[in-house]
Amino acid sequence: MDELYQLIYGFIQSAIQLKKLPRQGWIRVGIPLSDVESIADHAYNTAMLSLLLSDLHNAIHPEKELNTELVMRIAIIHDLPECKYQDFDRQLAILLGKDKYQEFKNQVLTSASTELLSLITNEDVKNRWKEMFDDLQNKESIESKFVSFVDKLEVLIQALSYESLGYHSVLFDDFWKTSKEYLDSCDFDVINELVPILEEERARLDD
Image 1 (cartoon, rainbow, N blue to C red):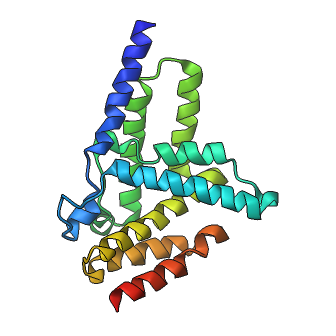
Image 2: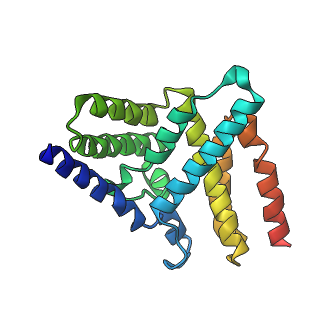
């Protein structure tokens, strides 16, 4: 039993690194490190948004109910493997090409999740977490797709937060472009109806 909890402590020590790791994309565009959110900051905001929007979706569309527990599980762990390889700047996708970037990212995600799973010795728990990591990587469930869209929505909200602090909007044009392109395939209206509101706020800040 002592070994079990020693490994769990090791797992938590790995996860806590997310609080220290800055999001690389914001650094690339010139946001000073003192203002750059950590990966943990982003993960928390994504999880909070996922919970709120999942509840709202289920209230509006009970016939298309999401499993909110699964939504939350995926949202909470969606960037957890980054504690092992840090945050990838999407500029890599430009340098490597979309297909090679995705292949590289999947390989690293698999390696990192395998390393994390090695710290879970209870087979039932390990298998459940492996299913979540696989779902996260392959977007097999509607819940993992939902979280992936919320993830992009959170990027836009964070970009707006920086713009409200006085950072020039042009710094974030690429984030808006790539996130909105991804959201073009989103069919959740609780997410889609927020995008124009964010755009209006961005236009107001630009005035």
